[in-house]
Image (cartoon, rainbow, N blue to C red):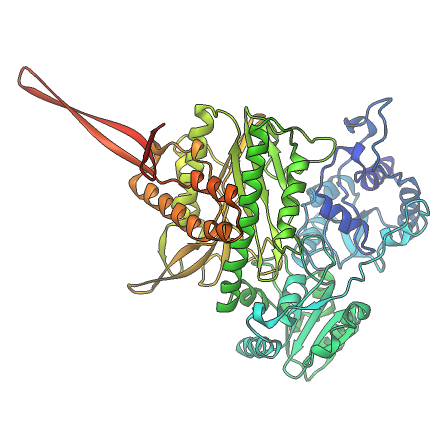
Length: 640
């Protein structure tokens, strides 16, 4: 083995320590560390100790640093024994769940492997499309990638007695109540089987955790922030199976009357049997058009002539919420908005009165408000960023980066909760002092994009990518942009990021989140949760519109009404009225008087008055239009 290979392996196993300079969400970190078929992120590039600039001579080791020397040495021995030149370890799990991306593995392998050498990987952990791309790229240079018969990281971790591998979760699964699901198991299986018949497939293999949870109306606690169970599913014309840890299923097995429960690992034997069974036709496997698709292990277990790869009916049906799901989601999102509104009112009062709050203390307090409102857990790691931290799109505050929330810059808060009935995702940007003209202009332009995207009426078949232009138009006009998507699907007590078709459908629940980020200074994002409904208009096709679900005030001191069009101003004032009629009413019902008064101040109608001044000079009439921004609050007229 070359010295370069050893350097790779050293970095591969050490990059999870804080000293490496890598930053990943704690949810991912916690999940990966307690799974025995996934491991920590490996950055596949040649890195020396000198490149690890976050570790200097004499630096104190961080408390969460892990010495992985034993694992590294053991892994090197295993590679030598198997004649592997490299071993790929990904950030993903066996279900291709959402985790931070890893670097360009193919490029590194092409540069570092010699002709005839082979890389290996656990084929369960790499999506089939990624595997095929790696294989094709390596074959062009006389190199190869092969499945490893066992996960080598799992194998060597057992030798590390100081830092033993955490076990899988054995938290019990639960049945998701029908009053929230809106459809029972029998109805869902019937719809799936109908979809199989339409494409002449004999079986459907479901590998995505949220799709299994949706199909069988179950929820789990195996992945932080995502109420899913480590599981697979197979549905045929005559039977349906759930592959999971039996201990986790023991309390609900008798309630899954149409489903056979098998051990999690039994999926592989059943897949092989289906593949060779001559009475079984095509096998529907998750394709990669809308999601990563199935793993290469699943793909490779089914013979080529039987593979039918496409977007699964479970993905499509899960994304299209039924009437009961939408009703429950409206209520739960409003309740979540009440919790967030109460917190924002409290935090503003605290900071203005001189109390010190930091990014971490604020997000922790918000979590308390959500749990009080009925949240079962958060829906993702809260993004709580003050000043320059707000410019880091997926910033996560830690003890090392935590700063006080001051009154001279913007505070960006992106958060959400998991409730029976809804997964929530909302972002608000605040200022607790006197904002600059730049703060006001850019906040207003982001708000304009949010309004334009969210108020469009559009015909069936309109692509999300076409609507995205509306969200960016106001900042594009200044030669600026934001480096993330405008919208993603949101689950119903499932994953906060959910795939869907690019052609918007009635029942989709999605985010509306334009932003602007000034590197090193501040970040702005305004995110609302919306659902697609019938606009009750028809030409050659039906027309749809977006209905606002989030009912949380914006920051009026950051809104320059002069920049808004009449239509945008009308939409904004309508939103204010809806917030008062929903969140406001619930605050009154809960006797939260101070929070209600705060909400009223934040949702006072904004308006403009045009004053025309006419002067006559030498018979010529010059008309000057002067726009005055007024805020009306009852009978009180206040000039800003």
